Amino acid sequence: MTVRLAPRIANPPLTIAGVRFAAERPQDRAEVDALVDAAFGPGRFAKTSERVREQAPARLDLSICAWASDGRGGEELVGAVRQTPVRIGETPALFFGPIATRADQRGHGVGAALTARACEAGGAAGETLVILIGAISFFQPLGFERIPDGQVSLPWPTDYARLLWRPLASGALEGVAGLLSARIS
Image (cartoon, rainbow, N blue to C red):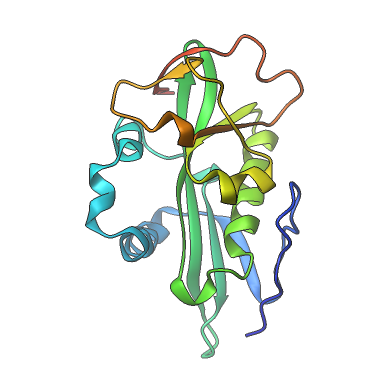
């Protein structure tokens, strides 16, 4: 399989040679869970991000899987990202993650393309804002920025230097402030 390197820019290519991107389906859950477990190990369950995700189910229509040929006529999961509906104060948002790529796919643009696809899906669904806890070095080139100190709070211990957001619509950040909580539809 040939994988083209995706540049780290705010709008990376949404396709990579040999990789198909599609919304997560209920039957993909076990595979996505296994990929996330392999990428992060059991320590992920102690993280604040997991506390957020425990509060509401991910929206599968906005969660994206990356599939590549398995060489036998089928496909195998090489990456995935989930998005969970939340609120910041009264403002609806999406909580991004976990995002995981198979070890042999890291550094080839799959994560950047998954991020772009997930943000595109959120915007197309009328969502205006995505928030995450992650590495600024990876996410800033993809359009995320650090949230100003004190503007958003979480009820769990949080490294606020890793709290990032990306507006999906013009004016999406105006007046956004408050406690991050689950948004149950």
